Length: 229
Picture 1 (tube, rainbow, N blue to C red):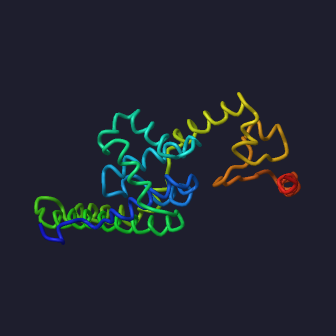
Picture 2 (picture 1 turned 90 degrees about the horizontal axis):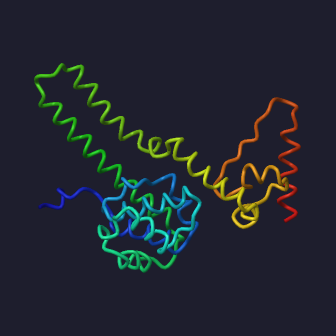
Picture 3 (picture 1 turned 60 degrees about the horizontal axis):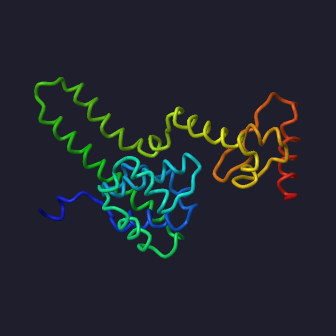
């Protein structure tokens, strides 16, 4: 097999991203919106990253133990080579400082692979003499459009997944209100904390109401309460 036959990929970058997340619990925040499991060339890496995203969506800590637990629950631990594989990933990097740069390398390689796939599909369309030319052009455009929309598609998440994750989070807060102080920043209003769970890293909070309803005053109160602590 020639070098040109091997799809573009970077095993080193993939291992570095996963290792960075394992040694830095906040590493996932920098790459979650950029990468999806399908962007990883190595199937074992995709399994590990999928487990990390699941933990992140459930607001659970990400480390070798929790990742192993998720993978084991899915009966996929043997597919990645067991506990030793996670240990190898942790030793792949010494710092998570460059995690975003590694993630960009993975994303670029993934786009190139998708471009190759789309190109092959377009070539096959060119050999199809039985289908109307207009239909072939439409299929070819869709194949290429799928590549150009990669970044947008990766940011779309089913609302069902979001609601399930938030429901578990709210249930835990209602059972133990002190979790707000442990896992987030209090708004200063217990009733808001009880319903929303406080402010969390990576969240975008939208304060919406009709004009002259006190949005600015409330936002300033939030800021003042947080600054006091």
